[in-house]
Amino acid sequence: MARALAVALLVLPRASAQEPPDAPWSELAGGSTEAELPTTRSGHSAMWCAALGGFIAFGGRGAMGVFHGDVWRWTNASGGWQLLTLAAGWPSVPRARAAHSAVCTGSAMLVFGGSCGADCYLDDVWVLRSHEPAEPRAISWVEQTTSAAVAEHGTPEPRAGHGAVWHHGLGQMLVFGGQLLEGGALVDDAWALTGSYAWRRLSAAGASGAPGGRRDAAIGLLSGRMLVFGGWRGYDLLSDLWELHVRNATWAQLATEPSGRRGAAMASSPDGTAVALFGGAAFAPDSVYEEDRSDVWLFTAEERAWEQVSTGLRGPAGRRAAALAWLPGTQTLLMFGGEQYVGVRRFWSDLWRLDLDKARLWDKAYAAYLEAIADEADGGGADAPRPRTDEININLRWLDDLFVDLPLWASATIVFGLPCFCLCLCICSGLYRQRRRAQARKRAEARERAHAEAEDDS
Image (cartoon, rainbow, N blue to C red; front, side):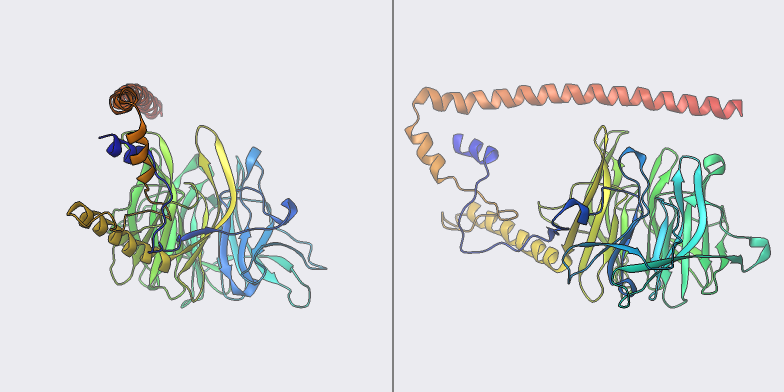
């Protein structure tokens, strides 16, 4: 019994002839000094853009409510971050912003809208181009004057928390949803920006069969169709997945998992056959409070269903409003930045790489470890391989010697005293959680009453 209790309490390294798979997540070094690293931020944009020379990050909001307008680049060749600067004779720059959208067109980067403050929402369109190799690390910004393809449809209103993707086949930027400044309205309209910078409305706000207004949804492209997952709608965190058939401007709902969340990051595979989803803020179990996730999901055109990716123990902390990119020609994702709320906001500036091939090997290895457990339970012998997770397994040989050498009273104290302590701890923890849930219910009821009174007054 003492040995079984020790198994539950102690996890120690153990040598084994069978090496575990490499961890799917790995953190990438950014630079040798703070000046060579982007500051912490969330609500930024980041993507792999070959025209700009690598993984490009722009904007975002950091600690103390500071909005950023800087442009950073990370490449495999440099193995670190580079701050891109304005080319000579190109002084124009967009306003610092967050919760905007940005896409790579193949020759440049397009930025649309976003928030630049509490009462500042934008509807401008900027084009970012590289001046390399003539000027190393040099870029230029040009604001584009847009028009309405159909006069009565107009152009998108200033907004933040929307999403956008680049449709390579059509050569257009597709934009969905977000929150408007006037009245804080959440919309579900869809727009296309053509190559001549003319706005074409694909689906009006509140149209029949549309997903419904929301902000902070995850946006991707699958088989030439725009995907919209989750987001925030008032008191609700959504878990629905929708696709927009761009050519005939019709919506179809696909799935209702994973759990409802906002601020999740989505990346589309370069060949358009899959999308990956990372993190986001979701409700904690049996609670009205949000918790930040770090799980990874895949949705493929072949399976037409979500599949959770096993990523081991090591990896980035849970977060929302991060940015995710899929590297061309690989099964590799890059994730940068974001924020985590644990009583106070914590902003991140770390860069992580996820190898999906290693993640698939990890799934197989974990299944093998489970099989090893079953074999050992059936009498596989002391030399049977033991399961371990992320290069950690259990070594209990020294514990056997310890309990043999201990006096009887000490062994009895460990065997009977520790379970009693753990039981008391569980009871106290349950009472605390019950009290927190009761307080949360009261706050939720108070919010609902206030919301109902506000509707009655209006």
